[in-house]
Image 1 (cartoon, rainbow, N blue to C red):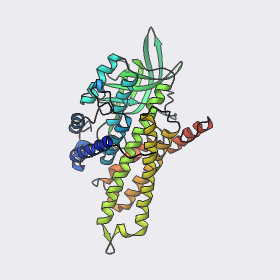
Image 2 (cartoon, rainbow, N blue to C red):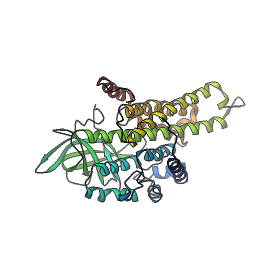
Image 3 (tube, helix red, strand yellow):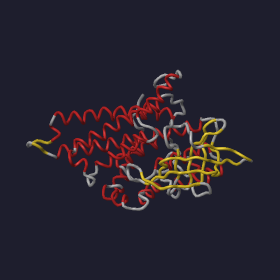
Image 4 (spheres, helix red, strand yellow):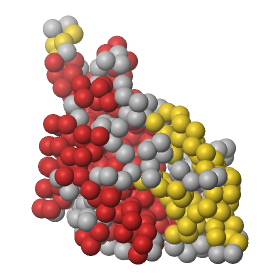
Amino acid sequence: MDFDFSEEQEAIRALADEVFTSKAGIDRVKEVEATEDRVDRDLWRELAVTGLLGIALPEDLGGGGLGVAELYVLLEQQGRHVAPVPIWPTAIAALAVSEFGTADQRSALVPGVAEGSTFLTVGLEEFGPYVAGDPETTAASSADGVWRLDGAKAAVPVAHLAHRAVVSATTGSGAALFLVDLSGDGVSVVRTQSTTHEICANIEFSGATAELLGPADGSAVSWLLDRTELALAAIQLGVGSGAVSQAVAYLNERKQFGRPLATFQAVSHQLADCYIDLEAMRVTLWQAAVLLAAGAEPGTSVLVAKWWATDGGQRVVHRTTHVHGGMGVDTDYPVHRHLLWGKQIAATLGGASSDLARLGALLASGIEVGA
């Protein structure tokens, strides 16, 4: 398979890199980290103005009419610059509304995402041991045509700003997606922060009214999980690539024993290992992304990409921090943000062991690797 970017995708990559480079430099990131919401509103508006924010959303709803592959191009660049904006939760939630929502839901929410006036989020994670995509502690019940939620979701990104959340819940017939107003009755949003110091929230539902999105047979949840996991893999690829770029620049500049650190074989081997991991992350991501974009059944490809992003991504950010020596743990030095982002993404929706367990279950069910 050819994973080279099309002319359109390359133009998106170049535009995204230009926007993030000009609007999300290290000094600006530090400023945003000191704010209450820790979201760069100026950058968010710029992403909307350039059309990047709605790039994967339908044209009739104000979007660019492209697909998830182009969204992943954008997310990779965000990861490279560790830009503090909630692109993935808002865009993925908007895609779910576009795919499964009613005409009223679509027109009420999706155009606002494209123009940058609406934040959305996704709630899939729960407290305690759980399998991603298989909600256990959040349940939905229907009476007189009204759905209500009970339970809790953990570490929901940008929930303190989100107008609506797309959450998973179990029903009598299977797992399903629901659209919830986070300011409504029966919803408690408890603000906290993630490893990256971004604001997230634990959400408790107590008879909260909700709107069903799509069928209640597990298929909509699987649809959302696939796209969410690849979004995280795309960001992780960018995080690792950005960390390696910083390490290369540092090692070529820093000298010991009269020589640049980059000339020492043991050091260069560390970066070579990073390159191998990044290439594995890249090809597995784009194999799965191409399948999703084509409307094909992804099989195990999403989980393979997720595992590489989790396992390989952690190795990359740890190695690049290590070769910086003492500077790697200096919080005034930019590379530590890549370490924090890498660790956060690796822990989202289950770690590497969880990914392997899910992959093993798929293989045991008869699905072939890469199918």
